[in-house]
Length: 186
Image (cartoon, rainbow, N blue to C red; front, side):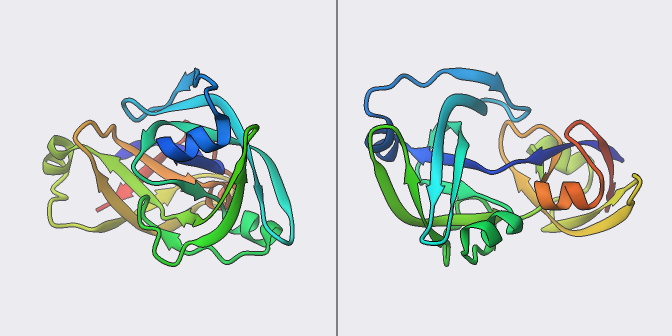
């Protein structure tokens, strides 16, 4: 079965109290909706800083989460001089320390991860695809640099829209872009 692909560039999820520290009373505006229901790219950006380097203008996504998380690629880790672990969103165990700088302040937290490859899905689609007892799958990529990518985790949410998420390193390695189709290997 083919599904749509989303290439996830570096971004930040914020809990509300950290947002206030970084942006004060600045209003969050939606720039564009993302494929996943209720998720959006905001008008806000932050800088990420470590003792080695800085990455500017990293997009803040909404809505608020109950944790602050920075999602980056391995290439970003090399730039920043950190060793972020591969994790499921929200799993910040062993997350790398990074300073997040906004226009009103900054915070330093162990919150930087490389998001694992994952398939967004809702329960009904999971039943239809016979994935109830499956934790991860593989995907087949047909492109100039075709590949089979393993360890694509199943991420079920009530309003999940069927979509595979890869980071920019995986996307670039396979010559993929957002909107391309990949085949699920179940």
